Image 1 (cartoon, rainbow, N blue to C red):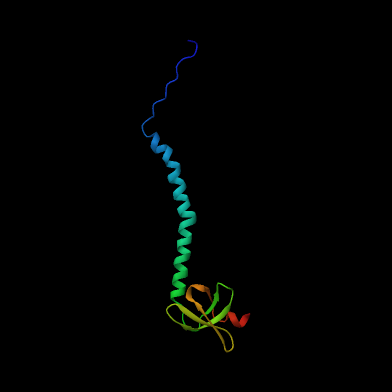
Image 2 (cartoon, rainbow, N blue to C red):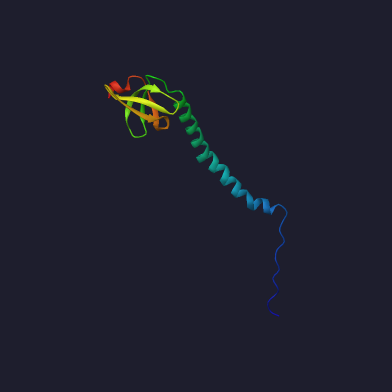
Length: 105
């Protein structure tokens, strides 16, 4: 009597797309700010590991600095001191150092 009936408002055409648009924008930002840089870094890491050769100076993921003495398919022998070699997996090599870095330490 004093209160009128409430009816649902009709959806305007395209409003479903407009409500979905923020999710798409968030995903695109997430991809370009987080996923893509990680993929690029992983690709560079794989390329560095594939290019390892005898005589390269490297740092392992454990923080050991040494010179590569032997490279096989899955392992790398690293000389960490005179007549002291360790064998580590290729994936454990974190980065390659410029030549002469070990002597400057």
